[in-house]
Length: 151
Image (cartoon, helix red, strand yellow):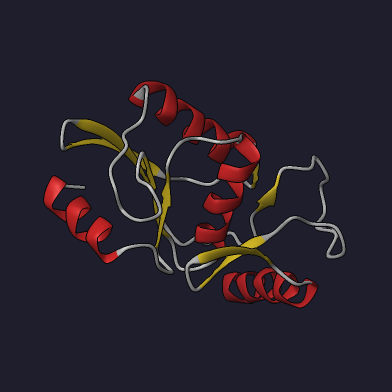
C-alpha cells in the first residue's frame, strides 16, 4: 500500500472494510478483527491510528507486525493469510494488515476442536464498521455456502 492510498483510506474513516487500532491489544482481540474481515469481504486493519483518524504511530513496527502475524496464524482457525506493510506518516510508523475475503469460511478463534460446534464457536463477521459475533445461523450459512461452492 502506498502512502497516498493509506492517507485516503484514513481520511475516509472506519467502515465495513477498514478498522483503526491505536495499539496492539491482545492476540484474541486482534484475531477477532482478522476473522471478521476474512469471514466477510476482506478489509484492512490500521495499527497506530486512533478511531478519529489521528496518527499516533506504533512503538515497534517489527514487533507489531510479528504480533499481528502470530494472531492470524496461531489464534485463527483455520489460519488466515494476510499481508502486512509498514508506512511512515507524519514521522510516525503505522502497520497495516490487509486481509482478503477467505475461501475457507468460517474462521473462528482457535479452540483446538476439530469440528465446528455451532453453539460455542467464536466466529466473527463485519457489520457496518463493527466486528460482531456471528449467530448460529450465520455460522451454518458460512460453513454450508463454502462447502456447496467447493463441490
